[in-house]
Amino acid sequence: MKAYVVNLPSPWLLDDRNNVPLGALFVFEFCRSKGIDIGFIDLSSQLADTWKYPKDGQVYGLSCTTPQYSLGEIFAAKVKKEVPKTKVILGGIHGTFVSKIP
Image (tube, rainbow, N blue to C red; front, side, top):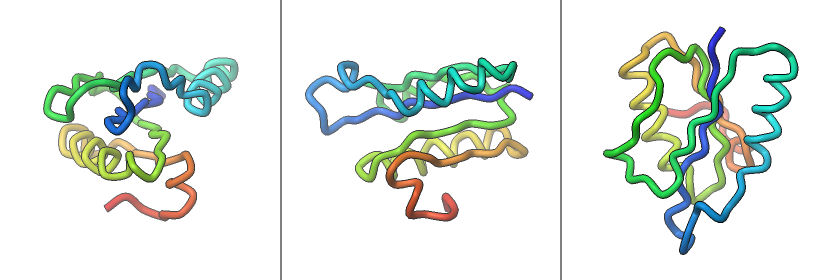
């Protein structure tokens, strides 16, 4: 199984590259330590129409705060359109309060 952890942009910050995604990195390292084939996709400081990411994932995990939720919906829609059988998992503080990405 190929999986990816995705760091979404945080456009409300002056420089979202200074915001280390610790939760996403913990998940990445845990999966790697268990032998899961996992990659990290950093979309920080990128506009949605310029996002480039691998299309070979079976699972994409998004760490999402409330201001990033709309970007998470956009990413999920793009991935599901291009890789229909993939799973998109939403985590983080906003992911706790929604059961399904539309």
